[in-house]
Amino acid sequence: MLAQAQLNQIVKQTVAYSYMVSQPFSVYVDAYPVFQNYWLMNQEEHVFVYGQHSTTIRIIQQKLNNLHYYDETIDGEFGLLTEYALKKFQREHFIEIDGTINTETIQAIMDAEYRFYLSELKSFDRSFQFGEKNEEVEKLQKALFYFGFYQANIDQIYGPITEAALLEAKEAFSLPMTVEITEAFVETIQAETVPEIVEPKQKTDNTSKQEVKQIKKIPQDSNQIIESAKALQGIPYLWGGTSTSGFDCSGFLQYVFSENSITIPRTVADIWNQSSHVDQASLGDIVFFETYKKGPSHAGIYLGNDQFIHASASNGVTISNLTESYWQQRYLGSRRISN
Image (cartoon, rainbow, N blue to C red; front, top):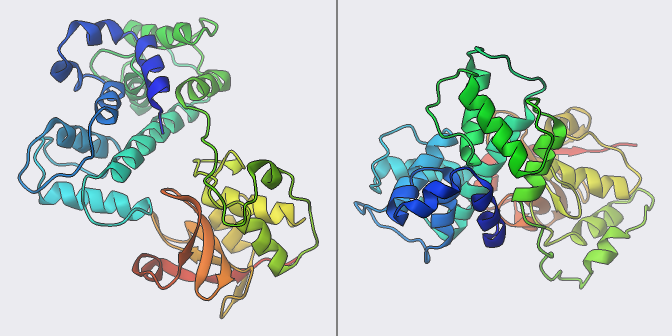
């Protein structure tokens, strides 16, 4: 998630900064997502009740709309449809499903929105032509708007305003003033707008972060796989993460098995397809779940006694229980990695 210092930095880099300092706080908070984040991070604990109106509720509705969870009127009122959208988001991001606007949920929403717009930029592998009008241009405009560089209407047209916003972004990050959307451009935005990953929480076995990085490859053995996995507890979740700086669920699995000289695919679906079905999970097997889309989309390593270890979007590498209602309802089965 964006840290306060990093958020201040990107706000000052945007072309919208002059707008921010010239307007009352209540006016500019609706202008750009980056300012909305600034607002949210400067509020006290967020707990709201039915029928309540607030700027925070309106911002959450807007963000859930951007992420395609909420498609109703953005009115700032906490009602049934807002609660439904929150529950859907919480369910798909491994947060307690209570439909409340709390600090954990708000932080997860801001993080998801950031990752969404970064992925939109990563999806481009070409430059745009003047006069071009399509949904890809709209995606570019919305991403530049999110990062605070595009100030006009979202019209799907690549013209002088859109190109000027792209060049403003490159200038802000001291990149060559070209109109191409390059990998270096996206990587620079990511590096400049995301803080360094915080140190992992204290691990139950007192294994330090440096020790985790130095785990040596060992022969295949379920106990050794479990030991390797448990040594990573507390490392934060990072979308697309495959290292001890942060993991997503499949990146965590790939790392653990790699440390034990076993190569597995990168995605949950491919791991499912290239592993063998077992009727009952044993130590070191992989348990699969259907979460945000049909089919296997989340997985972890079985530890025995209905417990499994996985990279959770809300808690990082953590241990959960298959008997918990959330996991029980989404459990698809267990499979085994073979040499």
